[in-house]
Amino acid sequence: MSNGDDFKSADAEAGVVEGEVLPARRREEGALASQTDLLAYRTKLVEQYHRGAPSLMARLKELGKEGMEDQVVAFLGEILAETDNLLGNQLVATSNGELRDASVISFKRAEVLEKALKAVQLRQEFERSKSGVDLDSPQMVIIFRFFMSKAKDAISRMGVGPEINDMFFRVFGEITNDWKKELKDAFEAARTPR
Image (cartoon, rainbow, N blue to C red; front, side, top):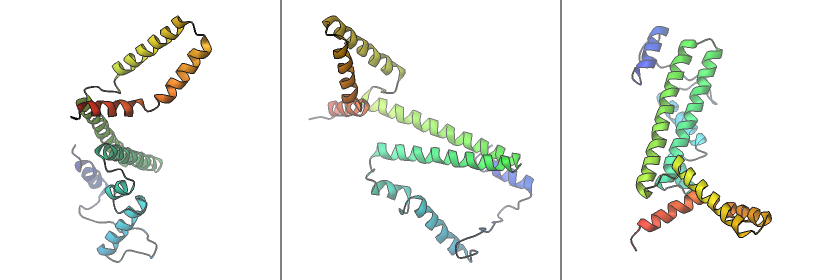
């Protein structure tokens, strides 16, 4: 099934005539008088959703998130928020006994999650191509643990006692709190010609 076919076939089963637009049920001032009112109302709702900004891009700009990475993370967040909206709609449909609608929504949610997963994979591939290293890979975890065990062995061989060992790893944990960002910055600096 393609994107629009799911709802078209579901609407046909329910007897909804194609092109028929259902009016908004309510609005602060009452029923919507025209299509212009509907568009203005929609614009108002979008601005409320984006906390006063007219669009997602404008909100990101106001927050100072204009970089590609910030935008990708924000877009992924929006996609995942939409999966929660779809899940909510699916649960409402199920509780109303509308199993056909719940199934269609469930299928759409699975498609959105699949697209989000592909976006994450593309982002990881992009990061790997930028630095040559995937910092989130299982191999990176193995490398990190390997060097931590070597540091522990070195401290043990020095015979300084458990309090120095504990202090070292506590301080090391504090100064490496943002290690991925710092490492990305170091890779970027190494790639940038001077």
